[in-house]
Image 1 (cartoon, rainbow, N blue to C red):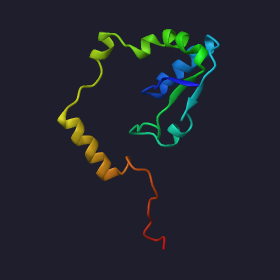
Image 2 (image 1 turned 90 degrees about the vertical axis):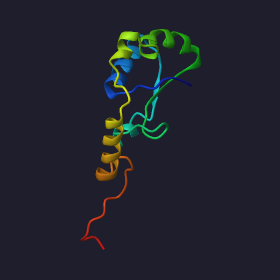
Image 3 (image 1 turned 135 degrees about the horizontal axis):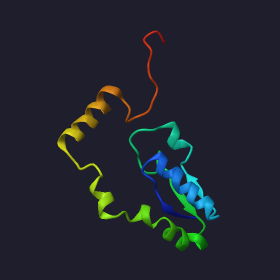
Image 4 (image 1 turned 30 degrees about the vertical axis):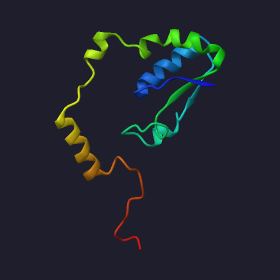
Amino acid sequence: MVPVYTPITESEAAVISAMLEAYEVPFFIRGGSFSKLYPGMQIKDYNTQTFMIPAEHYDFSRELLSEFINPSKEELAVLPKWSLWRTLRILFEAICYGWVVPGRRWDRNDK
């Protein structure tokens, strides 16, 4: 099995799954269930999903998913741009809320 695409959102993964099933392309989503356990910031090979396709279906699936793999200029124009404010907000959330590194939460009564 070879990787064909890594979706950005859960809804994108659902649409791609439906497309592949409609065209009877066998696939496996590597990290599909684990990504739902640890949502938030996506880290490659930790909580991302990757569609795995048998090698003999690779060319057809690339053609089928071409709109996702190579988006148009209009679609790229609506993506959020980098900004200092956005970076500072992400750092603030990581420090104050601890959503970047999943782990055990300590209870003061727990000894």
